[in-house]
Image 1 (cartoon, rainbow, N blue to C red):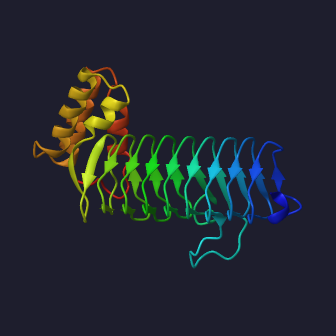
Image 2 (image 1 turned 90 degrees about the vertical axis):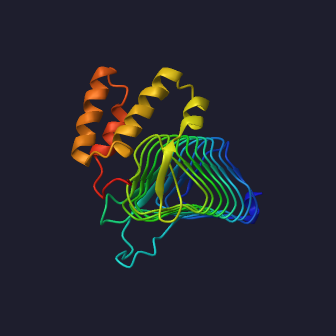
Length: 256
């Protein structure tokens, strides 16, 4: 159905990619093997899309950012492998005020009308449910689930295996493994079900529960909590590395 779509002469499209009707593929776009654009998909460049990605109708990928500082600089979007972008997904390229790149990892599911703004870094194996949105410069780890209508403030970081409830509004960093909900967001426990589904055994989950209590339930200052987590991590041979890193690397401050 390529004859019903516009494809810029310098776009590079794999021979195994499927381009449905009424798509627009702009300048400096690369589309890898076995990708599918179902219909009415807009992709602008510079954008590089690796293999196995599926784009549903009315998605707009690699568009200019509406950031008022953007003056048409050549910035980019990088997309990994085997992602699914459902209806109406929007993703903007980066800005020179950051590293000039928006990036999406592998095997993510972005449901209908989700938005990834300029300069975001999204890892792999994440789920963004309908109408979830990331403001600029947000970093998402791996195996994160953002429930429907979750909104994330610019420059926030969300650690691996975090989980949000419906309508959550996030304005500070979220440590790995933590479950949050509400507006404004607040911690409501460990993402135990998510950890079980990903093969974490009972011993690992119990250690993470101790870490969660140390950060949120013992009344420690942040410095005291970090000292407690470091001791606990050493005792358990680095099991808390991801949790501890997500706390110590926070720049906005963690949600507590």
